[in-house]
Each structure stands twice: as C-alpha cells, then as structure tokens.
Length: 168
Ligand code: NI
Image 1 (cartoon, rainbow, N blue to C red):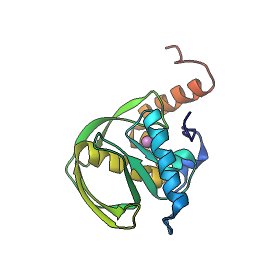
Image 2: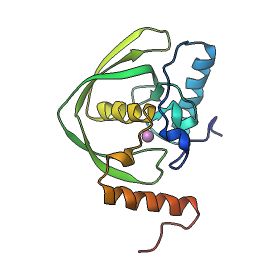
Image 3: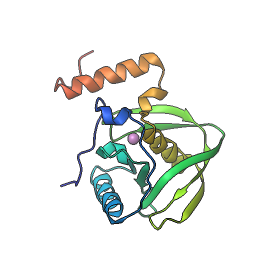
C-alpha cells in the first residue's frame, strides 16, 4: 500500500503555492522516502509534495537513473522549445501534447543541504518544469487551449462521479 493517496484534480491543495523548506530534518527525509514509495507504486517518474497534500517546495523523481530529491528548486534559465506528450498522476488517465522550453537550468538543494545545479534537457527538463508548476499550484491543464482544457476537465469530473469515460 502506498504511504500516501495522490491528490487529484479538484483537490484545492493542488491549486495553492507551496512554501520554502526551512529545515531539512529527519521528518522531511521520511516524507521524501514516503513520496518516492508512492511515486514508484503509482507508477510515475515525478511527484511533488502538494500532490500528497504537503505544502512544501520539494519534489522527488526518477527518470531511470535512481531516486532523486530536490528541495527549494528554481529554474534560473530556459531555452528552446519542445513538444512532449505530458501526463500527471494528479490528472489520471489523460495525456496532452504540451510545448515548453527544451532546456532549463535548475538550482536547489539536496537532502544533505548541498547546493544542486543541473542543466537539463528534453525529458528531465520537462519533468522539472512540470514539478515546479505543482509547487506554484499549477496543473498541466493550465497549459492547454481553453476548449481542450474544458474537455479534459469534463472528462475528469465525470470519472470522479463514476460516470465512466462519458459517451460522445
Ligand atoms: Ni504532475
């Protein structure tokens, strides 16, 4: 069983900006361990703290190179343009082609409090931008054209009400 239930579209916690982490203590390390377990069981490649109801600026990820944790992450530079079919554990069952910068420079700290500076491109850059959005209370639906966003929200509401994928 996952340590956490992943919050999904409609939960107000996903719309709030998270606050800076001020102390990296044993409790925070435990939180990130539980977030990683939840992410792997989902399964997913990234999970931000607000998705488990915690309003702190941190996320966990693993794009096939082992588990990673980033605390107080910021994107300082971005460049290029890349289209990717993006999904989100908080928007289950739906993916969307979204254009975002192809490369980003991300800074933050790790669980030992050491500064981290990562030049990322393509999938990792996309993941960073997606998780940063979660920390600012933004879901990927906000990157869609209004009509596509409306269709997606209707599908999600119908699913939440147990109405299935919803006819025509
Ligand atoms: Ni997400």
